[in-house]
Image (cartoon, rainbow, N blue to C red):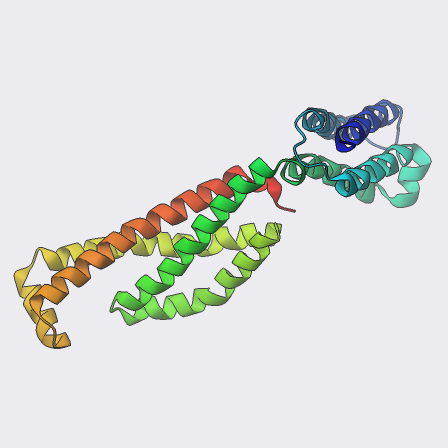
Length: 244
């Protein structure tokens, strides 16, 4: 495999960048220390990854090498002044981020774990929309309609490992996770009240047995939905470095 050697070279380029950055005068010492810390972390990540490569992704490795060479060549006072301090800082921060996301490009096992969390989130959101329809409460159905577009955008972006998708997932998930315990409490209250079962049966024109089964189904699905979303969000957060 060619990737491990290229990744080692990336790590070495970043070490050389640190040596050059030590001599740079355009940054105040505090800022310089922070940039050096980011480069040291990135260098360590690439070196570690070079020994764990499972997928020989030469194209990605070459991309990373090119970026590391660019940063190394631009690490001097004249180059930084020419490109601008903010742009140089952004380049270093991106390199640090690449050093974390690269594990998912070279290690399919980590990507499979991420996909497992992604699927859990998708199934949880899909079940949320089903439960919103089963809840018999119109306000929950309206809320689900409002969340439909951001939820779909989140799923599409997460599939492409987009950071926006992760942020949208954090934004849309709380309401479904609140709805599940709400439905559990509501339908459990119906099961404990024979009068409520009779009233619901008469209102819907169904048997009392149907109402009891319906309530149990909603409760079970709500528990499953909460578990799926909780696991999905935990997994997405654990693998947050996969997103760009």
